[in-house]
Length: 277
Image (cartoon, rainbow, N blue to C red; front, top):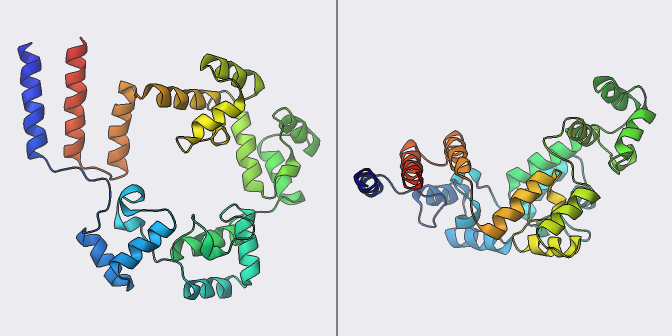
């Protein structure tokens, strides 16, 4: 008991003396103020722009490095010139890849909101993807050791897929790789039905409505284990102890927190271990 009390006291002292962890940009952050001054925007105008796209500093950004220059009519012109596109062709390209909806203009979208993102994305769409043709398809067949196009088609049909569903070889390659070397059990009608029964969902539609409450969807998952884990987490609101250890490593790697923050996490884990034993 004395060990637990001592550890709890150490934890309280540590939290009191270590820096506060901030995982969001605040409006009065000096780095943010310096950035908007650098790009020539007023603070409130910048914040209003983000909110018009249903974004916010606090909820969507951790560092000013993630910010960019808001899209305007003036920022569209260089993209059209650099990639030799008309406004209509640009919009059609973004519709094709799901960045904007049919009938929307590039400035109406809620995904590509910064100049830098638009330029990078269009460059990737125009120059970074390889169309499925005889040459690229043959390379894929050779790499994955399929004897013929028909053999690949037969393999894909087992998963309700087809070569015809893909315009670009990179997307087809990703799908083939996923089915050949799965990181879990691919979702199918049988295991999805079993999952629905385990969690008392009346239908696939009921599950989809439930997931939407958390901004999630069945379509976001390839493997039943991942979907199962998410539902369990939403319903029970917990994370396994191993997840916290994994989070420590990930946050350090991504520079989200400093080592003092992880020290607090370590003490919490140690305290949890003592009171559980």
